[in-house]
Image (tube, rainbow, N blue to C red):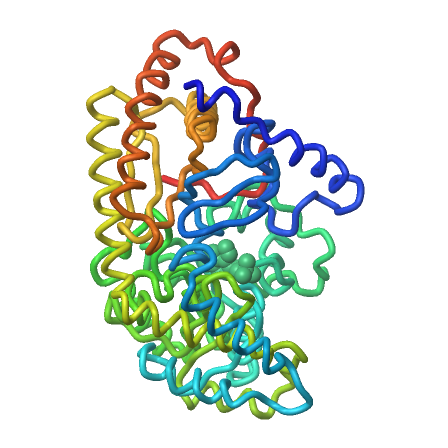
Length: 447
Ligand SMILES: Cc1ncc(COP(=O)(O)O)c(C=O)c1O
């Protein structure tokens, strides 16, 4: 606890005040806003990182359970990936003609990803999805998109909330206003429910002959595909002539080297990647069957930095290291150990939280807890983790740098924190325990 008490990221918050004056919203990624976690304690800024740890501007070190929203699958500043990037930087990174690494990476992706006969590159997940949807619309000549999950910030997706401001509620976050998205896109992006084939079928029937693609997260945090669900989606997509796109921005290279499509044995027409593909360097990819992807050669899909060799070199090195170190299996073993530890201690202490989902992609949910107690319980959990030098919330993204030492540190912290949570639930004295409450913002609900 003494370690906890001295841990105040004051320099970070001084800078964040300036950021709020100069950068709308303060951060570039909404889930980096410190007010979503434990305001005043959660560090707004990082100075450096290594393995599963990072240091804030005030010299405090944190064991990270989020790992750059899952992007850093090997750990921060990974020696092998960084060596490949540094070597590339010494030779230059972007030129008037393309890098041969584009073809080398295409070969590597085709070897690893079941649907990847052809690939295109970009710089992030939302961008990869925008490209995939454009290709699907181009190849089918249809406009409408059925979606299930979170797919980024672009117009095609947020258009879902133009007709009903609740369309995105169970896919992204409640109450998002599609401000700035053209009204003309109303009715072009339509949601269906995860693990509910009849909701997909109903949409396909209602919009028969108009659906360009079905884009979905094949597994979503705590939600795993029910038996036959992904197979059913595949069958319906084919029957209705719609392109099936798996958004593997989170699941890719994590559930298995070939992502969810390898893990669950259902192959889409296209799939999108970012995050773990390059262990912290800007990179994204769209992979797919030749028949669909080839259409992109006739379409205007083009950008200067999409052939930047830093992202390409980082991706090649990352994929080779993931294979060499058997990372999906290793992070699965760590994640399983985390879930067992968390659930055992939660049960022992009578704390109504449980760790669920695939071990490579863990969600923490509430067990039979009144809705009004969920937010204070989460805030208290995050606050006490932060005080003990652990950066975490209700999702855990295991990485290759998480091992026995980290698990022991987590165990020590949970053994201290769970009795506090139990006492707070018993006493209801949240106000005296919470330094600050988190602020509602754009976050998906877990559980
Ligand atoms: C499933 C999924 N798709 C797309 C994205 C968007 O990726 P990016 O933030 O790289 O644009 C995310 C980001 O969290 C995601 O989780």
